[in-house]
Image 1 (cartoon, rainbow, N blue to C red):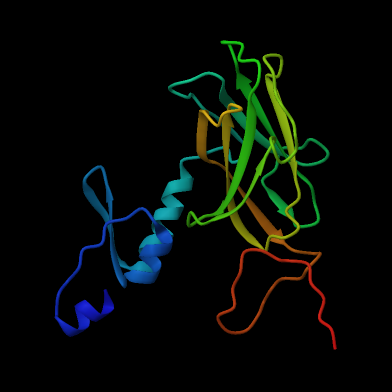
Image 2 (tube, rainbow, N blue to C red):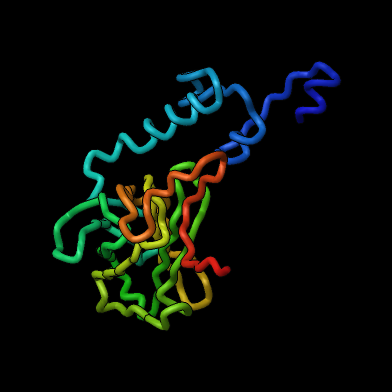
Length: 212
């Protein structure tokens, strides 16, 4: 796109929900909401405005309710808490996070599975974990509450978003709730603050050892 705009003098209108693509391809942005322009300007400025607006509607960041329109079972609510069962969405990387899903399974579906997916606030997916086949856990009609423990140890400080999916053995999607809950890693006591010079920013820390 750079070559076309620079060499041929054309203006290209790129329409997308892919934040990563917008960051890499566009220098200026228009943000539309209900057909109206709500923000225009430099790409970074508009994206920051969009992300703040997107997550500001969630007044309670550690508890959310949800009404799925479609199949049952579906996720009625999600809450996030720590090992002491205190509601929180701010953690250090050496802590354990817990997420509780309340399930509506009034159709008494006997076998279903759950999946979480982790992304940064710009929508880039970073990790995924499923109750099956990863952990060989199968839920039944008696399971109206599911709890998953997560270790944020690999994450660098910043904000992250969890989404959840309920699905059948043959991969039929019952419920797909994206952008369910936002949490923040305030410090990585285990691995440091990652204040690296230059452009080497990252979202994950991998255990490693330098040899000489």
